[in-house]
Image (cartoon, rainbow, N blue to C red; front, side, top):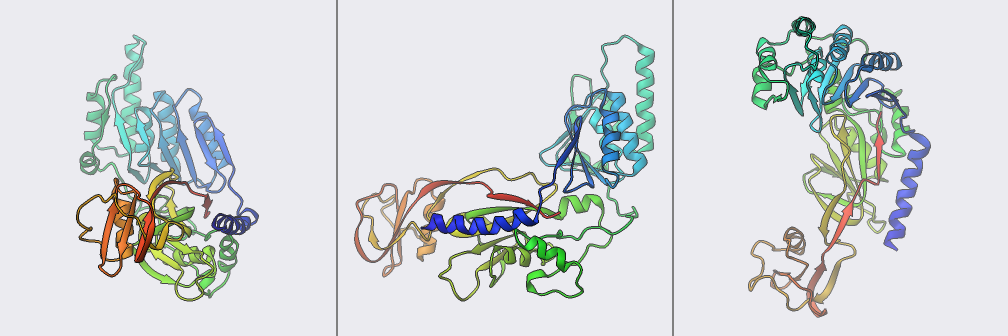
Length: 422
């Protein structure tokens, strides 16, 4: 019954998304790609080969409003890297290396060309290498590198590190070096032409996406379609690394704790919209979809994703910025409060300790204590004594007045859907 309820809710919510929010198609040009849902960003993912400079020009033609290039490359052809870097410098584009990304060798020239730039991942440099004995050609290439780096206002310390590192080695800058050499560069002095997207995106979740587009044309908004305040003068890099551009939605997962506030919502879409309207303060939400709850809050807005906990009647969403990778599957030991708790049931024997858990004073405390303890497979809480007994083995259930017991199982959770907010 619960599975049917969950799939019914998922189907209703995601049907609205399928009909109202189209997923962006991706165009690729060699190692470069552009997502139609976010045409202001060009992604470099792969080696820089002999055709990469031309492919970058093609990507720029396909995305004339591009403002940012994200980088993940082991490098490659030096001349192509310099040509791409020159285009980035001429067009005053920003460059970014995400936490999961790395930019090495010839890719470093591209990064350093950014009018605004930030490295959250790895940035590595070394000397050029060549199988040719042409000393004159090598000197000309070095001259080109120095000329280009000077035009990018590259600190001489960075150039020195580059030319002191052998070609078969790689110097990866530490966080302290990134700070000391000023490798990150803000765009505060840069004049951003035209309007910028709002801090919190332009859509909610599922069916709320269409409502948000309608609300953008209104001067006033109600609770369901409140419009976040725009970030005046936000740079392309700030927009990419801070503004949520998609949401990962989970069914059966409760993002427990770290609540900012709670409210009453009609559905998960309205709950997501309430989170979006908080101008960046709200990072995640959990919506309790239990139809038996007729009154009181069922939408919980959160300052962070908090701790993940299984709950079969919960919908949760986590907002992601462009700098964050899509979340992978997580596996948890869960004791579902709706399906795995049993009132007036005792699980005798199998105790992990000769004493009750000293910190667990409520059934909720006891449930979470068992979830957190790897050796715990079940628990019994005695309400009268306020005692929590964690179990390493499950005994034969028996009647236990004023007791509640729970049984743990391992579950894997992946996003049911990742929805673009662009």
